[in-house]
Amino acid sequence: MSRTDNNVKYPDMVRQAQLGNQESMERLTVLAQGRVFAYIYRLTLDDELTRDLSQETLLEMVRSLKRLERPEAFWRWLFRMALGKVQHHFREQRYKRAVQMSMLEKERLLQRALRCEGDGLKSLISKELSDAIFEAMGKLKLRHRNVLVLRCFEQMPYSEIAALMDCSEMATQVLFYRAKRSLKRQLSRRGFGKGLLLVALGFFGRATAPAEASSVPVSVTAASTEVGLAAAIIGAAGTKLGVAVSTAVIAAALTVGGVTALNNDNTGTAGGTGLGEAGFEYPSRMLDAYDPDGDGWEGIEANETSSVPIVAEKWLVGPPPSKQSSVILPTDHWVELKFRGKIVDGPGDDILLVEWGANGERACVFITDGAGNEHLLGVAMAGTSGQQTPTVIGIDISGISLPFVPCAVRIVGMDERGGTPGFDLHSVRARTYIGRKDF
Image (cartoon, rainbow, N blue to C red; front, side, top):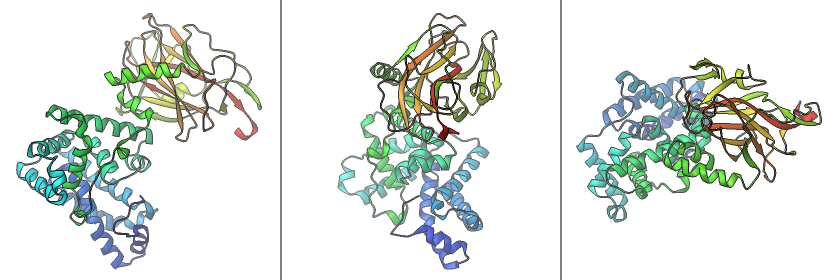
């Protein structure tokens, strides 16, 4: 993390402490204490528990600092350690979702925030609103509070948060989007408009800031709470907003290229896949797969009545295991599949998806470079006959200007219609050009 406190160069201090410099270790511990305490307190909203977990975290920091391979990743490493302590405590207590604050604690934090911020905040924050803010934050899931704290108060980029939480950057942005939405909903239930989001976050950040940072204003800007278009669409999937956004996306996508349900088994011209030839091919490997439920992947044969556990990569990389196999992509689940060569435009459709079961299932389709850059192509929709038949969905990428070399496709489940439920992805093919540099 690039952030420094009072111009302190943490990587240098960490290196000195790792070499056995006791003065550097003591100073590092003192400087880390406040931020660790604030981080844990914002997750637990329990002063006594925070003191215990902070002490445990700092002791473990001292014991294991020598094992930190990258001193510049000190804060990410330390916060991950602290998060582990909090998660372990909540698992033991069977207490994962909501936390509560005493009235005395709420009053103490309210007075602290108002005393530090002065008349500007006093004109906006009432006792009723401050209680609503603390209660709303307490009602959030731990992972939602965590991503809000790291992004808004620790000012971590999404890439750092993703590394800390062991997930992809896209998953982190989706989680942040949903955390914001959940906080807005909690405030709304207490009678406060959704426009108070930034005020609520800023107030909470000031009230729970480390003591040594009390003179430094805590402000949360609109820019720091933004996520990419793709994350917003995925995050809104399954909601009224998601339906509205996806409808708009379909209209926009049809103006550049197009997404067309062919409703037959015409999978396009195979073409050649030798060196220097363009032709359709199946993915060569899976780059990413997101299972938000953590339940593992399931697949189904069209003539079966129930799903079975599968390894998604084995079913989607290369030719499918059978003519009727499919991988289930429920809401928010996605796979990112890479091809050997560059995906290119040619006559007709350039990407072909096959979905099993014509029940109107939908999925967002992105073209990517496999390294974080992406372009939303549109929303793929299966047929609506209700029959166990394939829908071949063709996507034409003509007219699309990309600032990257496309070589992968990401498919994101958007709703849960049908009997399985989810977008039942049978296979993906793309028109690719394979040159010598691809080998």
